[in-house]
Image (cartoon, rainbow over all chains, first blue to last red; front, side, top):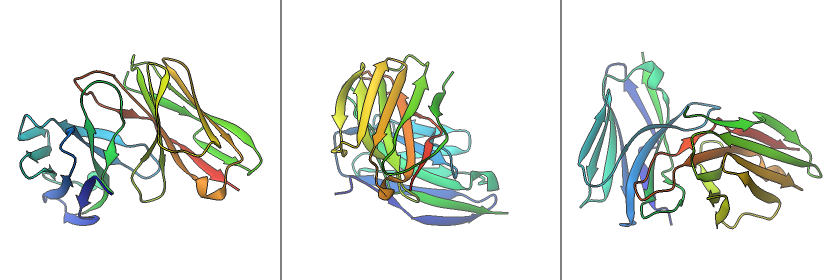
Length: 114
Length: 114
C-alpha cells in the first residue's frame, strides 16, 4: 500500500509558468513533509519542507501548500526555469524521536520548455 | 558542511564478488540510512542506523550487509549479488530528535551487477 500518492507522473510547463505537483498521504502519524529535487545521476537534494502546524511555506520561487484536513500538500514552482527540469519527489516521515526514514511519492518528471 | 560523501561513484561487480560501498558525513548526524533507487522510481529504504545501532531493516536480503563503524561512517557490504540488484545506492543522514530535521543524501553509487 503506497502511503504517499504523487501526481502528475510527468509535467511539461512553459518557461515563466507555474509548476504544480500534488501529494496526498494516508498515515495521520506523518508530520514532516519534505520535497526533494533530483537530477539524472545525482542524489535527491532537499528543496523545501513543511510541518503540519503551518499551511504554507515559501522559499524563493518554491512554495509548499499544506491542507491537514484533506491530508494533501503541494509544491508550487513560480516563474519556472529550464534549470528546474528534474524529477521531484514528495516525502513524509513521522516525528517522535528516533530515525525512521522517509516514505517517498513515486515522483514527478518536470520539463520546463524554453 | 552539509555533505554526505559516497564512494565509489560507480561499481561493476560480478555475481561472485564481494565489494563494499562507503558513506561518510561530518554533520554530527546520528541517524544514517541506506536507500536503493531503480531507474524512474523513488528511493526505497533499506536500513536505518540510529546512534550506530541498526534500528530498521526493511526485509533486505542477507546478501546486503550494513555496518556502522562510528558516528560518521556507514558501509554496505555486498556479496553474491544478482543482476536485479543493479541500482543507484544512496546514503543519507539526519539528526535524531523530536524536531525532525532534514535528511541529506549523498550522490549515490551506481552499481551494476554482471
